[in-house]
Length: 226
Image (cartoon, rainbow, N blue to C red):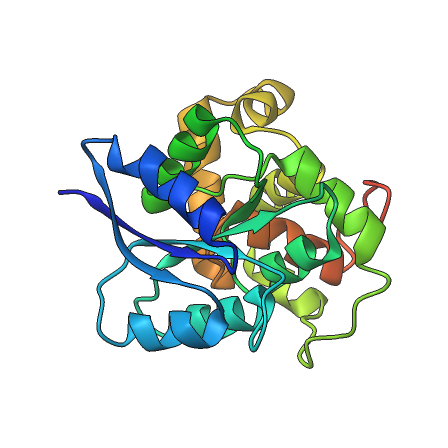
């Protein structure tokens, strides 16, 4: 079954380029396009979509607010934020809004396709180290979302799960965490899955965000106190 993709960008030429790349794949199809967030939300009411490629800077309704509205709905498609500049504050806001990751618009086609497949399968596509750089730069500047979680959220985790969460937030991959804790990668993946379930998070990007918001990790990548 093909991955149903929606393209949301106010630049027609960019959408055309992405559409051509995706159309050449046997496992993907572009089922909808929109030039701004309002059009995107309207299209989603009548079209089944698996993954949304979302620009952030658009007229009428920007990509961050559009992402927030999409991700607040049950059974929502996964959202990949597309940005022109690395370390874009909009990309960070998009992650907080529920996106599964972000990519630069000039990403090589093979990486874009791999990212779409990864997001569709439930993984995040932002390297944890890149996510951490975003957090380090922008988290002190961004307003609260209104309901900041406290340390009690983390009390649901076992000590081992807290260890794993800390290392995820510090930018380590599952393989690196496995080596650090002398565990198998499969065991680390299981721990990450339990962390997501216990804390009600979508993916490891959201794990990193929560780790910063609760103080488990401080800006700069260091561990915070409990």
